Length: 128
Image (tube, rainbow, N blue to C red; front, side):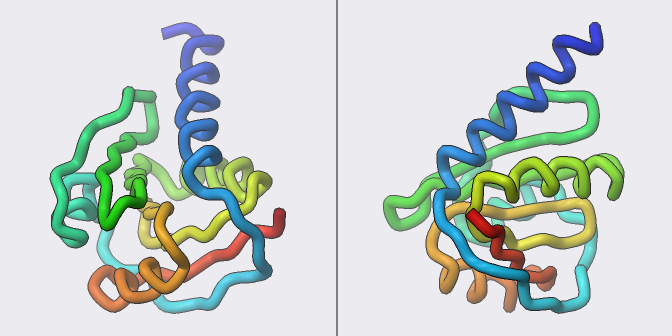
């Protein structure tokens, strides 16, 4: 895979999440991150089948629709990859449930807070 194609895939994943996660806010509320879940485990926690969305070297992405809202699940190979993704994603605003090498975004902030009870992690709100 060429560096350009990896970057293109990364940016495509970021753009997909940015479209889904409009909104704004301030610094997040902390809770100890839990296990490193797969996108399939994250989707199962919300009760929907994971629909894979492309592939990249260090991140897997899937989504499903819950109560009319698209929820996006991301699984990262490394913490550094997750931090890098979050740095760019939060530029677009939104609310994220962030755990150990995983992120869930989409739906209302209250929905992510409820999901946090099942998965752990911390809520992060990006400035828009």
